[in-house]
Length: 469
Ligand code: SAH
Ligand code: SF4
Image 1 (cartoon, protein in one colour):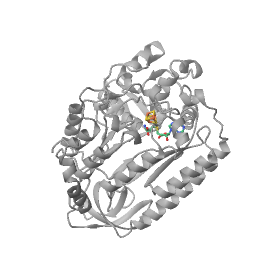
Image 2 (cartoon, helix red, strand yellow):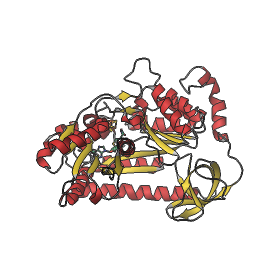
Image 3 (tube, protein in one colour):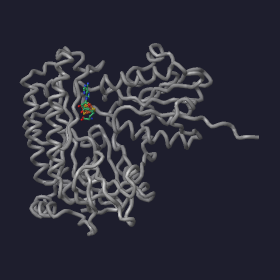
Image 4 (cartoon, protein in one colour):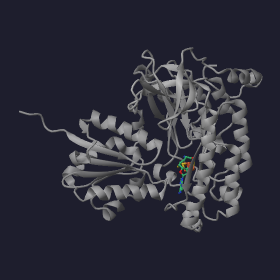
């Protein structure tokens, strides 16, 4: 007798890093629960769409995609998971009757049970918060890299943003659990970690006597086997010297800070409820660049927020030109139902004007990044090898401490998980291209050491920092 056929699932992810990390964990969970993954939606019994509701365009792409598959749906079950399921609720069953299962991002562990319930009863849903469990403790590793969620939810209520409504209250994962998760991954050969949260700098705010994010970062950085550690995202109102001191002290923490400004106009920032001014932001960047001299900084910009004038936008352009960011994500404002901005302000910047501002900001940033790329030629970087290049035989792909991917010819003896140094010589296939140097990289670049010496008297006075000191 042949064994019973496996239930096959197809998973498509929309949106942010956090969604991709959750999807990776969901895969592990479903496979562990007896499902089999397929990359062909036609062969799947269950199609899962892990959605993002942050911008209208992402939501439109999601529904367009589901509609294209719906015509030949047959007996397959469709599950809408993540933010959009939570935001729209069971009304989805009415507006999109071909969806059979709704599952919020916090309750992905219930999906196997929901699948069998929907097979029996036609429909099933698990919305809202559920148990405060982190399915996130499941591995989401790809190669030598693994994202680790340290918080979920957000209570900042930036006026344009649906995340507080879609993902609920801030809940921090206990520091011991984060450490145990990382330790388990190190034992399995993972070398590079990304600590994830909507605003990692608020880590622990919901827990009495928590030391906050900088000590957690320091503790994880000090763990044996952690060769690289990065974090995402940092809200400017909560980012400061205590974080930069920990970064300066640990040579394995990526020299990269993603700190969205959204707009350089104080009036727009006020209406966005961001709770900092342009001056505050610039002071924080100056402090980051002083304490961590080779730091790369990235940001997000929203163009066309209600009431954004040409002068406001010009202020943002001048700011981008001054700051010379490593990367900038530019979004056109889209009104999201239920947010304060949707209630209080008229979406009054015409679509064509949003598009024009988007293009102007993008072309300025493209020029800045091109110049930065050229400036990197001839520079030698410490690189953690991530994988063998698929399309360039004998080549490896690694990442610098600033998070930049580099392509270079291998030497046959080093492979994924090894550290090396690479001198960048040009650009190839969209990557910085370089040559491997044989000498061993120093664990902490000299520039950091001199800054640390200058700062040692201040840190001794007890500014919070890494956990092993
Ligand atoms: N938690 C992160 C970002 C979350 S969403 C933070 O606080 O920075 C990622 C980005 O999407 C935001 O930084 C913002 O630039 C953009 N975004 C969020 N809501 C938006 C909206 N309604 N319209 C356009 N862009 C938006
Ligand atoms: Fe949204 Fe603001 Fe929270 Fe970021 S900090 S998730 S932009 S509400």
